[in-house]
Every structure is written in C-alpha cells, then in structure tokens.
Image (cartoon, rainbow, N blue to C red; front, top):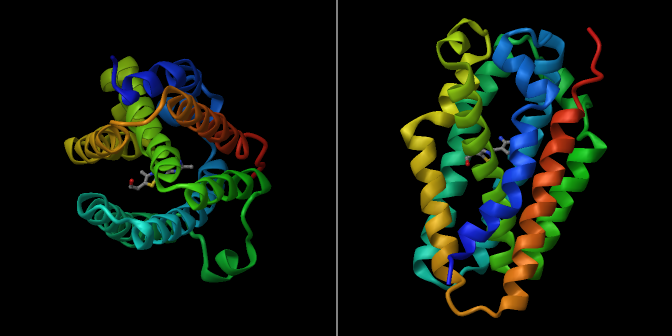
Length: 220
Ligand SMILES: Cc1ncc(C[n+]2csc(CCO)c2C)c(N)n1
C-alpha cells in the first residue's frame, strides 16, 4: 500500500507542473516580471499568511495528539516569524505603505481559497493538515522545479531570492516534516476518506493557480 503522501503527489503533480510554467512564475524566473505585479503579489501574500497563521492556531487548539499539536505550534510560530522578518521588510522595500495595507482587502480568489481551507480545517483536523500541506508543498515543488530548469540563469533575476528561500534545506525539510506528520496521522483511514483528502489537496492546487493569476492583469 502506498502512502497517502504518494497519492497526493500523483494527484497534484500535473497541476504543479502547469503552475511552474505559469506566466507569473516564469516571469519571476526570467526577471521580466513588472514590479507592480510582484508588489500586488506580496501584498496579497501578506494577507494570505495572516489567515494561514490563524488557521494553524485554530487547528493547534483542536489537536489532541502531542506531536501534531507541537508541529502546528511550530508551524504557526515560524510562519509568523517569516511574515515579520522577511515579508514585511520586503513590502517596505517595495514601497508598500501602512495606509495601502489598511485600505487593501483580500482579492476575491484569495478570500475564497482561504475560506475553503478554514472550512476544511473546521470540518476535521486532518482535512486542515492536508489543505495547508498543499500550500507548503506546492511552493517547495515549484521553486525546486523552476530552479533546476533555469540553473545559474536564475541568479540574474531580481526575484531570485523567492526561489532560494523555498529551495533552501530549511524550507524543504520543514515541508518534509509536514508530509511525515500527515502520513502518520492517516495510518488507519478508509479508502473513501483517503479519496476525500486527495480531492481537498487537488482543489487547493487549483486555488493556488488562481492565486498566481490574480496578478497577471495588474497594470503599473
Ligand atoms: C498563496 C501562497 N501559497 C502558498 C504559500 C507557501 N506558504 C504558505 S505558509 C508558508 C510559510 C511557512 O510554511 C509558505 C511558504 C504562500 N506563501 N502563498
């Protein structure tokens, strides 16, 4: 019997492969992405991370298994740390002001994605772990695939740090811990439940593509 994570991977891989060729992602790799589009992405990703941390904290409050609870707490703390030490300084560098943050709202496609994940987490902890793993794993996969494809050419892109952050050993290892936790907590589930988890994972991968596409039409 293959692990759940292997099944999730098979289901999401075609979508992640397409995502790695998405116009926004390719333009980041080639260094041709207009700064306005990146700025809009950073702002929406900031809102996304805030909700993502909320979902992790909510799930932490529900967890009965000590290892799962500790993992969720660490994930919430490290995502908050990343938001504060990487995201916010980057937003400042891009000239995003506090006023701009306070008037901007979540893009509808992002809001729908976040509501979906929160809804799944409220239905069951394992649904939430599956949905949030897709976020982490898709970035780990896409950053690695695009970095391998572009190789040294990536270094000349002003967005190369985006790729190095998500291909770093630290990020890839944290993602692997998430995969291992999920595989452990689903050891005794039925095949019907497994199929539900695959569908949640696949749906989140679709939402992830929609998230990139939000910024394609942003004009300077
Ligand atoms: C739209 C969107 N999807 C996925 C991620 C990836 N991600 C989600 S939380 C987190 C921090 C620690 O796991 C990372 C890297 C993102 N940033 N934005």
